[in-house]
Image (cartoon, rainbow, N blue to C red; front, side):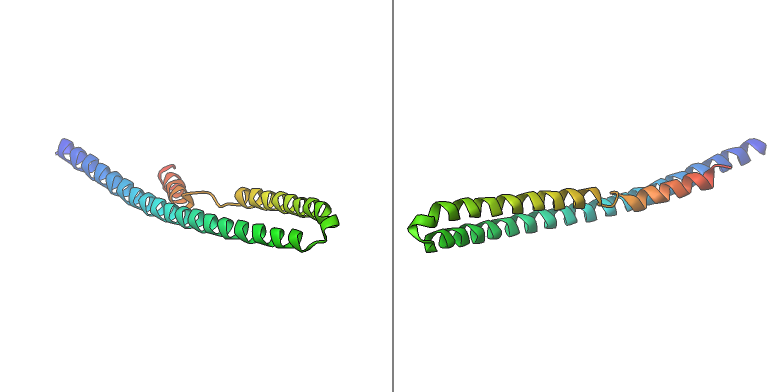
Amino acid sequence: MIAGGFVESATNLLAGLLELGRTRFELFGTELREELARLTLTLLGGLAALLLAALAVAFGATAFILAMDESHRAAATIGVAAVLLLAAALLAWYVRRQAAAKPRAFDATLSELQRDLKAIKP
């Protein structure tokens, strides 16, 4: 009688742990899909924006340099290059700042696992 109760209790414990693991794995899978979709959208949007911005800057810089008097074109070219270099440095700083502020990936899964661990420990 005691052995049967022990086996049933162990079976119930194992079933509960497997169900808990399955639930956490499903949450992880959902977060992974969301993270991949967000990353894909960010990459594609960023690449498109970079391409369009590069074209706009190239055409604008060319038009500005050609509009200058022939004697000032070298100075205008240096000025455009300096402005573009400053813009690149500011953009690099901004991207680094945003990358450092990104929320932790799979935060919900990790929080749930931490809560489970606290519930299991006495």
